Length: 251
Image (tube, rainbow, N blue to C red):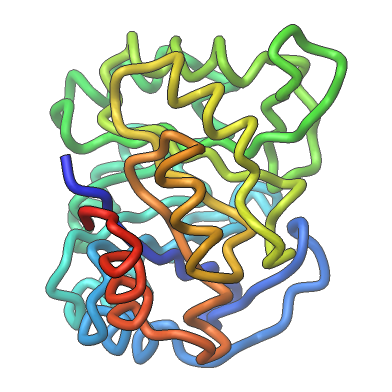
């Protein structure tokens, strides 16, 4: 399987936003325009993530998702606030190809099983927010509600449970690395990737092309998700891929 480069559009109140470790988010403009540009520049997939929907107990921004879906020509995922099969249907109706489920799956693990049964194995992604800790055996804990609620759930065991439910991918978003641009969290990504046989998406911390190379090799991830690197205009997806190819990566 060739490695992939994807991007995530964190949104709030219709605006593209980015923070550090889920805090101090700043608005960065129009997510629709950003999605169109990133596709033109060569990303392999776009994910729209309404990151505060769960915490604010409101519906996911399906209207915005529909607008983004109309301008992207790559696989498109929607997440944030997805809490039921009805929400999944709404996301697919808005034009998404995949639905990312996070907090609701922890609160109701049966939801993953039901969603896979209803929509198919290639449609449901288990998204996880992971924090390094000494409180669970693997050293990595699942945190939900936008990084606000500690669960005491071991991230590696939760990933295995997600694979058993039939999800097609697992996103490992490191809270420790999120927005820091100092490198992906290799230990948590590798631990989960080595524990499951489905693709793992590494998220959080990408700041250089070498960071991406490292997580796709040493970190055993199949997919690297970048946000800040694109949002702040430091790189284009095409430039990143060209450098990775020079480094010998099949992407």
